[in-house]
Image (tube, rainbow, N blue to C red):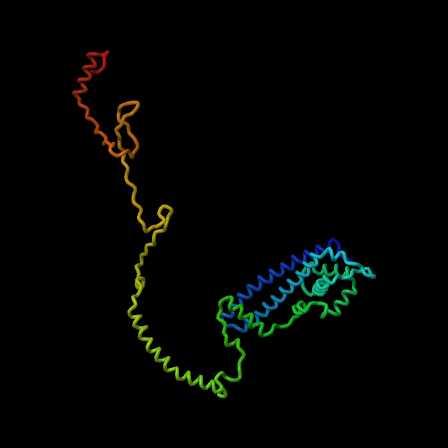
Amino acid sequence: MPIRNKTLIGCLRGSIIRLKYKQDKAKAIAVQQRRDIAQLLEQGKFKSAEIRVESVILSDIMTELYELIQLYCELLTARFGLLNALPASKSGHRVCNPGLEEAVKTIIFVAPQIDVKDLPDVRIFLMEKFGPDFTKSLMENSETAIPPGVLRRLRVDPPERGLVEKYLKAIAETYKVPWPEEESKPPTDKPAGDDDNPSNKQAVDDNSRIQPADSTDDRTIKPTLEEELSRAIPPSNVGPRSPIGVPPPHPTSENASPLIQLPTPPVLTPAYVTGSSKDSGNSVPRSLNPAPGTIEPPSKPKIVDVDDLNKRFRALKSNPWGGIE
């Protein structure tokens, strides 16, 4: 019986959203786990790194499985019209189309084994649509009805040794951690220079002959390096420094280059300029920067004489109705 207040298309869309969220969450956790494994490799704890990397491998396998189920749900959503238009059999159930058979069987088989909400509801809708015989034959012949990639990702087996080493090497290269190449190689019973191979003997003899030449070269090169070091001039910043340090000037909007000294502005003094005015013939003050050749120094104040004042008062008393002569 179908679930109340739910539809198949709604459950399919909800499953797609939740599967995508599962993938993003697993990828974020895997990134943090890879960082922790890189720190273990840097510290030389290879056994702990091998144990930790197994959980990363299993997480990547489950992420791939989520992606496959998401693709099957998107296929059923895109072909939902075909899913509803399937013909009915004699028992009243629908006959599955070959283009939908793989997606339908995979979702019915995988839904109980992964924890994704809305996916069990999709399984119930599909089982109701195609009948119990379809589901029974699927469960009995799951090895042939389900794609091998899905079955392989559903197995809970420890990862192989080669896959673990590949993961560790990839993590070391990603986080710039030195990877010991000798430990990753399988041990051999015979050494490289076995006596049974005559070519190895000749290579050893050649190496022994070349060895003294290398040592002489080192002796000839060493004095030249010492001479160059003795002739080298030490940098000026080596040695005791003053306890008082002055920080360099910072550039500003007015002086972008602090090393360049800006010129000081000239001091402007007020000046009076002679010239004719339309209103009166007296000299009038003009701007502080007049034209050259027209500047006159200001006149000194005139000292008033007492006798001159007495003379002007006597003239005013003698001629009260007239002006001062």
